[in-house]
Amino acid sequence: MARSEPAPPAPRLEHTDVRVVLLVAGFHRRIAENLVQGARARLAESGLGADRIDEQWVPGAFELPLAAQAHARTGRYAAILGLGAVIRGETPHFDYVCDAAASGLLRVSLETGVPCTFGVLTCDTMAQAEARAGGAVGNKGDESSDAAVAMINLLASRDE
Image (cartoon, rainbow, N blue to C red; front, top):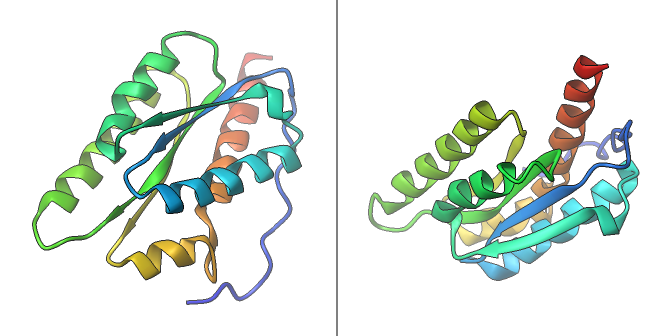
């Protein structure tokens, strides 16, 4: 399914003195690198300087929640972007990894108050992942960045 219209403009970050961290599952490295590229470009469009973006790689999507928890507890980050890809195989492993990554990142968000976005592709095929990591369907790294910016703005307005 091709994107029928251009992506909307990036949301503007209201407070550009914040830091974010990209936590990247490295199992499908080429896909993950494309997601990182999309996320970084979109965060720049939102007004966040490259020096305000940290990047940490973990082995796979299953490890994202623990890495997110460790980073959230530092108090250094306004948002955490979980990026990566899980491709369905012939066993139920896919279901366990996807569930653990999604529910784990959500739990970290709720327990720490630091937004953790879910920019993890959960695809049946490599072609689907490629289409969503800078291909015909766009770049889900962009969408993860937009969600992070929206949540940073929302939480900052609550504190004002």
